[in-house]
Amino acid sequence: MKIQIICIGKLKEKYWTEAVAEYSKRLQRFCTLEIVELKEARLPDKASAADEENVKLEEGRSILKQISDSTYVITLEVLGKALSSEELAGKIEDLAGMGRSDIAFVIGGSLGLSAEVSRRADFKLSFSRMTFPHQMMRVILLEQIYRSFKINRNETYHK
Image 1 (cartoon, helix red, strand yellow):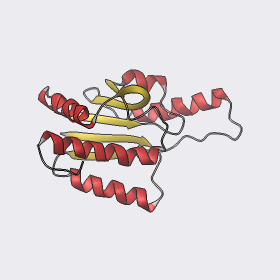
Image 2: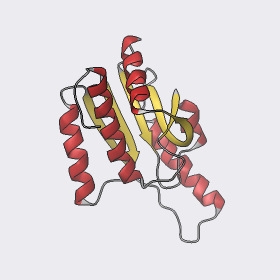
Image 3: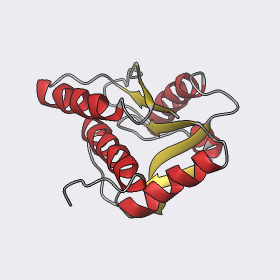
């Protein structure tokens, strides 16, 4: 299985990069992991609503360029469907059973996702109705993907 994490922005702080490296290492035995970091679009000072929409559109276009037609796309969205860890594990297992071996998880930038990216999603996933920094969401997402593989293989993992 190939898991792609498509995200806007680079990790700058050492603690985030170390956490991502740790979960990436752990995931090696379960899947091929690719993390695609895309450039944040520049938002002008005193940005208008139109400026913000243009940023989302620009970032959205760059996200969509990374996704092939056959990829199953899961976007992280506040208004998406909330799943338990076991339900996410079941979703990943079901996709594998249906031959959907390419999955892309998409984390938008600070302004969120464009409507076009949201429409491309096969599934919209919410981790919470709260807003989190996208750097933190990358780590949380990787941990949950790792947990999903452990659950699906009936392997022990700290609860």
